[in-house]
Image (cartoon, one colour):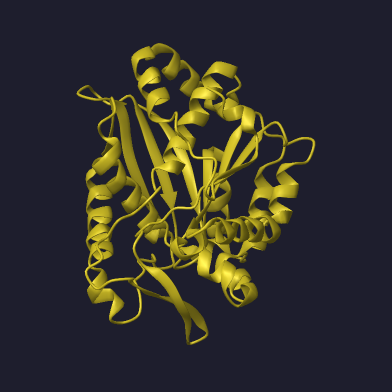
Length: 323
């Protein structure tokens, strides 16, 4: 089975696991009616199942001020990966989506060569990179906690070390998480996008250079991993900013929103590459999609409604999504 690697970049406690758990939940609840199926392996099912149970237990967690994190401990053995097999419904899967996660401390520049080499290798081998953004840290107190929490300078440095002389197109997705509060109306949504454009300007500037402009597609996909809790305040414990949340009503239930959008953008991007035939080291995906015509049409149907408004924006590379 062919495999596509996706790297998840994000500092500690941002919510990468919550994103994957909510993505799979939304797929199963709403998107599974399509002709494709997404099957997690046993380990992925176990981890995401536990996380999903935690996300649904909002009342218990909110008594202490917020939803708990599932940050992996430091060290090479704590590196986690999440595997989903993709294929035509009712048949053997044809492609494996391998999401690589790791301790958030790996994002921070350090002298640990093993950690840095891991990030470099994953970025080199990945068709797509998903940057998880802690939205309250970005937005509150004039971004006071943004650099400490989201580590944008370290993330830019990782890309500059790897994205040189690319021989194939790549997709970079910026996914604001815990963003429910900031998508309530057109004004607040506009402010969120403006803040992202400002705070990640150096990253966007790097991607728009002459050698990368036609190789890197960049999109913003805000995901509401819970959907029914809203930012209240930031509590500082031992120097660590901890966002606290509240529910509008005591009986409000877990209701994630738009968590499938990063997956739709990824699959739409893969389809476009098959048409353009510009794969480089990922040439096997072109061959796979070319042979499995039925699945290609099923993916096209699934990915046709990528959102481009309401906080969703293609920053660069619109042509890479024209299918």
